[in-house]
Image (cartoon, rainbow, N blue to C red):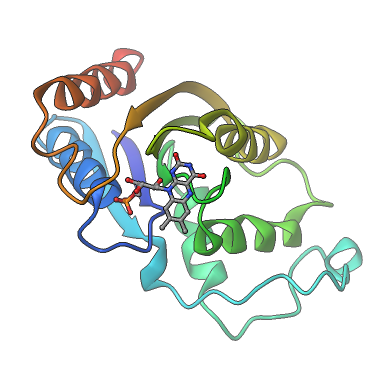
Length: 182
Ligand SMILES: Cc1cc2nc3c(=O)[nH]c(=O)nc-3n(C[C@H](O)[C@H](O)[C@H](O)COP(=O)(O)O)c2cc1C
């Protein structure tokens, strides 16, 4: 049994990313031998990284009062992670970047995502795909994950993916890639 965790990195609750990630969730959930969970990063109370670097000695974050560990534990517990990330100013949105920054807590540890596969879905109106993907990919790879696939979907208004057959086809191909080796 493989475990898959899907992350919606958009703050927009009824936008393209949440639609796409829910679509991926439903397709994977219909498969035998896969346990799938979905998380909206916006639903977690995650503080910023203050850059104190105490984690370099402590090997964990001094801030244990928010829900960063709760969300990162789901990443660590999964064989496969799938990241839906809209592009905000050529980068992942602040909520997603805050989460990424907080994983600095484990910078001085053995890479925690070794032997795990990751998949990235980048969503944007027209520009910044590669910059945002570089943030996601370099972060996942830093912690040892094997990024198997990263795809781009162009979308702006809330239902741009939902109402477009060729974009749904892109999602189906993305799901095929997730299932291929698993
Ligand atoms: C604050 C903000 C910044 C954005 N920056 C970019 C950008 O740099 N490049 C781009 O092509 N689209 C940009 N967009 C458009 C979003 O990527 C696009 O609307 C996407 O569909 C949003 O995903 P969502 O529907 O899941 O919220 C931006 C949107 C917002 C709200």
